[in-house]
Length: 109
Length: 114
Image 1: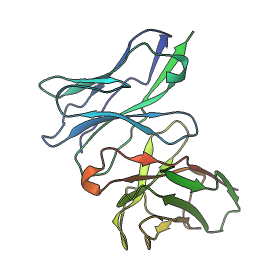
Image 2: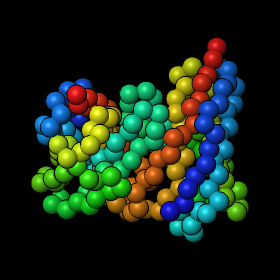
Image 3: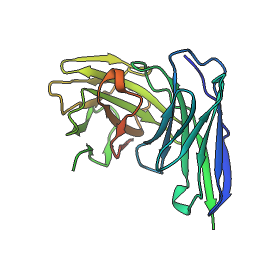
């Protein structure tokens, strides 16, 4: 199973762009990259998924370079409500989600 | 409203008692999952079910049991054999096992066993 590595924590201020990079050196050909957001005492919420290049939705962008050994979740103009834990997962369809400890993002005013 | 419901939100039990956590979904999803989360940790998969009347063990199935008699329901029983049952339990569902990159999670049940 591909293992992901991401920073334990990050700090930011309101209105800034936040980029969280995830390393997945042994990603398999069929693996997708997916990101989840979790607030305290709630279940995780799906944010975005991608296989290569760039994916954008109303919440975030996901950048995956050609070698696919890393990916970057980009949150534009964060607000206080974006304070949460962000999980990077690398998986194939039909296999289990493996959640690590994630990145705790703290946004200050 | 479509979604996943888990009840109760908080549950307290004495050591040695079995306890069943409820999970219901009205999303018409085929696949359902149970995870456990300990403080400061990520989620760990307990059991999952890809279809009614079928389920598979996850990474930490020992001390737990499940059933999937209906598509909408996937209850989890924490048995007295589970050595450290106090945790935050999360249920999730996805359209199917081949479309499981996007899972929808319930609000969770926090179980405390003393």
